[in-house]
Image (cartoon, rainbow over all chains, first blue to last red; front, side, top):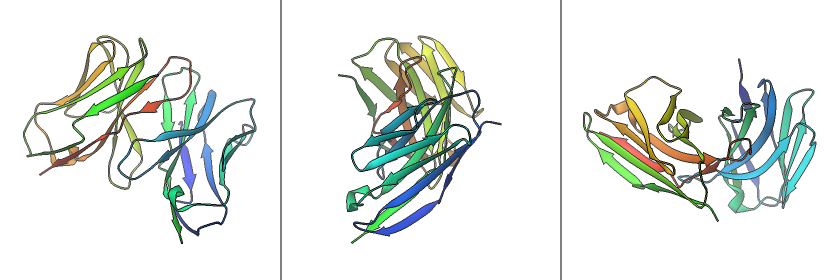
Length: 112
Length: 112
């Protein structure tokens, strides 16, 4: 069964600190993995996308890693800001191009 | 550039009333279109997707239906709303074999 699991479910960190969010998946055959940021009451916005051959992808203070062998990905946020408070969703798609498997997200709260 | 619109932004409806949510995409042709529902504190659940006009695939059996009367228009409907239909409804588009999904701003539906 194709599944995407994220951890932790929620996280609270101090402003300026770093944090890492985890995503494990069982989707096969794998096509790509994306991380989205969803502010409360808004639609998700894409942060990074990685294919099978990519190990790392950065977008400003966001760095995503992918280990296709262990089927794990992480999203590292550097020097967190209050505006980073949001839900971060991991999405994996298979080779059909039409099937997207969503994790339930990690809720991040950055406090001053 | 491509944009995606959803309306209304917020909707409060009584149980048993009909529903019509609309989504339109601008700046692209023949997109894949998707309807998702996000219940409070839950992950995104794919409801319907469409790869072309009149082509609708349903992922979850329920009292909702979707239609695609035009290439860039996707409508989510119900004849009789249930309390359990409350949630945040998101429309998204993607290009076949290109990986990123782009989400609309969402419609928050409250069924009383």
